Each structure stands twice: as C-alpha cells, then as structure tokens.
Length: 124
Image 1: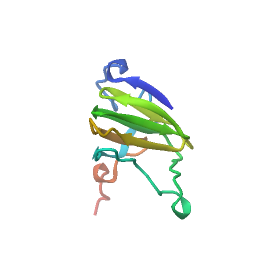
Image 2: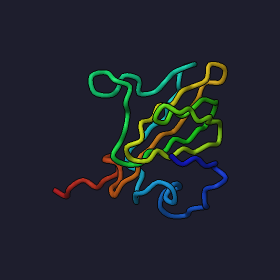
Image 3: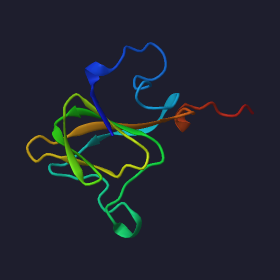
Image 4: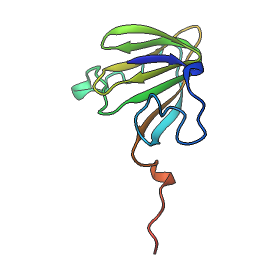
C-alpha cells in the first residue's frame, strides 16, 4: 500500500491524473462511493463469505470527504480528506468509514484500455 496526498500529484495535461502512482495508460473502471456511518467495504466478499478482498492489479482510493481507516491485511491505517491510497496487487483491503464523519471516495483501476463506454465501436 502507498499513501499520499492530492498535493503530491504532478500536474498532468495528458494521460490520467494518477499515472505516476497507478500503472496503466487509461483509467479503466471505478466509481464514486458514499459510505454509511461505520460501514466496512467488501465485507464477506471472499470465497465462502470470508472477509478477504484482493485484486490482480492496483486500485486507487481518493478520499474526497470524511475520515476512516484503510484496513490492510488486518492493520488499520487512518485516512482523511485529501489522501490517496494505492492498493497493490494481492493486498487484502477494506475501507472503514468513521461514525462521526462518513467517508466519500472515488475508487479506480487503470489498465491498457479505456473503459468499455469509451472504446470505439467496430465500423459497420
């Protein structure tokens, strides 16, 4: 896991804003998440309902509002507005929202291809 701040990002005119910390030419999937108070992401996601959530690629979490912890392999690392967390392949991770200041995040993956909605359709 890598943790940095929005202010650590280099100004970009081309490519995606996270290209220095998130491998891949294009942002290829992601979303905006509004966590409930005390919510824990990916609970019971693993095989047979176990609390285990990993990816084969990197994932970025941009903390837009609120506070919480990023649970990495059982360890809780505090996160707050303005943090960017990069999850490495194979790291078991869960985002925990605080009770007092629920967390809002953008999460994304990058890869060699654009998101399916941005790809050119085959010519007819």
